[in-house]
Structures are given as C-alpha cells and as structure tokens.
Length: 215
Ligand SMILES: NC(=O)c1ccc[n+]([C@@H]2O[C@H](COP(=O)([O-])OP(=O)(O)OC[C@H]3O[C@@H](n4cnc5c(N)ncnc54)[C@H](OP(=O)(O)O)[C@@H]3O)[C@@H](O)[C@H]2O)c1
Image (cartoon, rainbow, N blue to C red; front, top):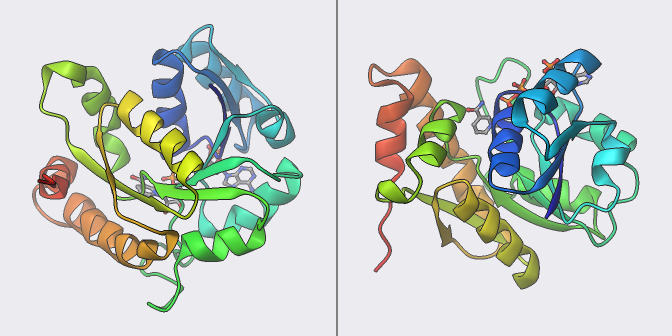
C-alpha cells in the first residue's frame, strides 16, 4: 500500500518506519523541520520518502493521522481533499498540556475528526498503545504471541485496511465495533498512558495490561 503519514513524531515516525519495513510505500509529512522528515525517510529505507501533507495524501491507500489534537485542522488544511481516503487516526482529543481529554463521553476525537472529513473513511486505531513498545512488537513478529490492539470504524473496507496495517505492525487486530466505540477506547488510552508514563512499571506494563484475548 501507499501510506501517507500526517504527523511524523513519536507515533507517526515509528509507525511509518514499521510500515516501510513491512513493505509499504511511505511518505512522512508534517514536522517542524523538513530535515527531520528526510532523516526519517532515509532511516526507514528505500520504500520511504519525505513530502508535504498534500503529497502524503496524494494516491494514498491509507493515511495515518498522528498529530496533537490542536494541530488537526492545520494538517487537514495542508493535506487537501481526503474524499474516499482511508484515514486511520491515533490522535487523542487532548488539551494543550496533555493532562486530560477535551471531549465528554457523548462523543470522541475519532467521531469529531470524522465530521471534519465527511467524505473520508475514518478508522480509530493505534491510540491505545504507547509508542515506546511499537518497535519491540514489530521486531518480535511471529516469534512472540501477538499482543491485541483494538480498532473501530463504520466502514468495513477501511477497517479491513486498518486491520492489515495492525497485523503488519505485529499486533492481533481486535474489531471493537463502530467508530462511536472510540468514546471508550480514548479514555482507555489515557489509562494506558497513565500506567506507562506516570506509574512505576513504564510502557511495558501498560503494554501487558493492554493484551486482550478474544474467544
Ligand atoms: N506518543 C504516544 O505514545 C501516543 C500513544 C497513543 C496516542 N498518541 C496520540 O497520537 C498523536 C501524536 O502523538 P505523538 O506522541 O506522536 O506526538 P508528537 O511526537 O508531538 O508528534 C506530532 C507531530 O506533529 C508535528 N508538529 C507539531 N507542531 C507542528 C507544527 N506547528 N508544524 C508542523 N508540524 C508540527 C511534530 O513535529 P516535530 O517532529 O518537529 O516535533 C511531530 O512530527 C497525539 O494525538 C497523541 O495523543 C500518542
């Protein structure tokens, strides 16, 4: 697949690198310095390149939205028309200092984002995993028992695409249902972050806690 990364920080930088190593064509976009995007692309190998958000969106089979909530409108403006595009969002609706969600339980960041791009096909995924464990999960690959990762969305085809990317990243995709389920996964992601960054166990503890085994 051609995958456009909108936001090349901790999540976008790592997931883009993983997708490139898994054989996808990746365009890293949206960082404060072009040199950073170029370095990410160089390090990710021949399948990756750096570009502007509009280049990342052009001809993309899937886009990863991985920006702070406050940057969503800006990156959308730069990406241009996303009609028909599969957009996998891991962005959480956080306040400026990342201490809390800015939305109540009657909606979610994923649903509010989907309203901004009504012609796109939005899937919510990867937001329940601390970025620190991503490379380890990918590198463990088939050797390890795959950790589960929940995703949700309203469009079956785009959920299939997201599930493929989740599998390529080394996880077992668990379909949690329609996009509105993000109302529950987003606060869950905060619990994971609390355990990972403020508890004593670090991201590995959050990662173990995150495992779910569907029957
Ligand atoms: N980190 C995690 O473990 C984690 C886990 C689950 C969900 N999430 C969610 O995923 C999303 C991304 O998180 P993250 O940790 O990857 O954030 P991040 O490391 O801060 O990455 C955000 C990206 O946006 C870019 N950016 C910020 N301001 C910009 C500007 N003015 N112009 C251009 N680019 C700009 C940053 O550029 P620079 O690279 O130049 O800084 C960076 O590449 C957030 O919504 C977060 O809540 C994160």
